[in-house]
Amino acid sequence: MANQFSIPPATARAVTDEVLELDKQLKSAEAIANEDTKVVPYKDEEQLSEFWNCIMQRKVYSQEIDIRGLKITFRTKTTREVEELLKYMDKKNTNLLSTHDYMYSKALLALTIVKYGEDFIDSGTFNEKLSYVDALPETVLRLLIKAAGKFEKEIEQMEEALYNPNF
Image 1: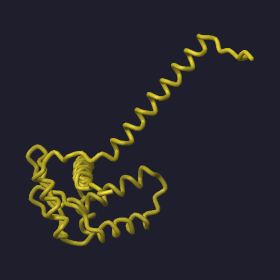
Image 2: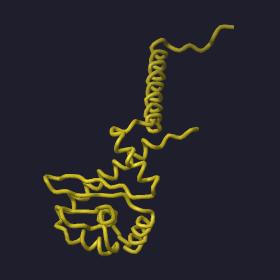
Image 3: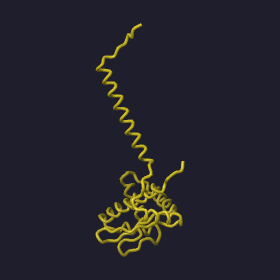
Image 4: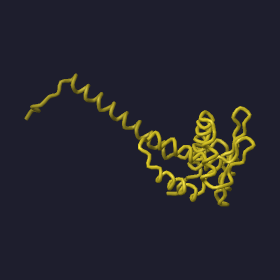
């Protein structure tokens, strides 16, 4: 018995091309997903080693940056500090996401910044640190929030470089 169904050659080519395109997109998506799990060597092995030593000794890791001659030191946070930050944010009951983000960024900066120029900020309570940050000019505050964000991103990159699961 002869095949009763036939697909015109142009339709067959179009379907084949579409399948090939979908296959290419799938492979591209798989490559992106695999890249997320790939361990990338960190750019500065000495810095990574210093970070690792701080973690192993249960110390905070700090880093000084220079913004046009102004020396600023940031540090990692303790678990207790993060919990204090979260409790603080829970009490704020902000209505707007932008307000929440702004308040969170300020509070995070208060916990992260150690030194601003000659001012040593790392001592005192969370509220004292927050008061210091609140007294800064808005432009300076935004600049410091961006710098602290870059510091946090660097910490995440070092954490990723250290994370190499054995499974």
